[in-house]
Length: 424
Image (cartoon, rainbow, N blue to C red; front, top):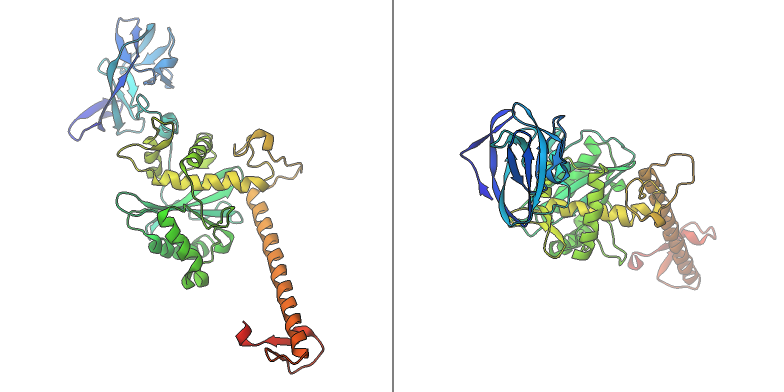
């Protein structure tokens, strides 16, 4: 792309700045002729405005369609597909709310945001019309998009994609799981945040949850990418005394019992397609404008995988994939259909979990109920093990063993025997 900081382009809102001009090579193009004799040559993906202000790609035009110009409406009289290699040029990032401008022949057009030469994961038409809320608060490196939670009894998931620094960002995203939607409510992207800094941010975040969102951190969940830096983060979160004492947010473990998730390229490709469905069907709400900027450069490469193209970051995108992984592999297992193919498109239709109850179920409530049951079950097992241990020590004490001592009150209850400190 040739960048521009000198010229302006004529738009319906006056002359406006634009980022630059991108060149691409096409093996074919369309030649569109109008009733007045004017002709336009463009790629099939180029976007025009119809007379009633709808957007349409050139490949979807038909003879008789009417397109908007600066001062008039032009009717198409002929469309020819030309099989010939030709260089074409796109105007990139026009600085107005429509991203629109006028071609030299007065047709109202649209900057194509790379549609004409690379396949983005998310349809650029979706990205072009994305709107963002005002940032409620910027604090400690975080952008906070919601002052209050829409579902205070729901589930918050904290996704983390750590980086080694340099040009890459360490990213922390906070997602609120609501019925049939997943909403980004806060984010952080920091090129200088290593594993220890991320841990400090998490300690701060859980205090913010309590004071500002009135949410208990132990009812949330941390999921992080177990890459090279992620292994260091796993050590800090699971084995350091400070984490054991102060970190209240639970950590996600994979099916091998390891903290975090390792996403290889095959898994990322699957997550990318699920992510595409969620975003394009407005089921995953992104509130970070820079996240959407990354998606313009998140494209399919020559081997069919999706990644950030040269000059673009993809750290925010891959961090969000962790949220998709959790929804696909964990949450959908007990969401009773709320995360089915008909609603969230997270499980295959034949694997859909059908809610036979007439009562509407909130997936987050179901999650919390299950976690409480698991915690209660775990507590019962621990208490049973302690009781068995006390009984064994009581039996040894009765036989004169010196490793345990009896309480002052000899009530015949084996639970009244104390384990000496040397045995703890």
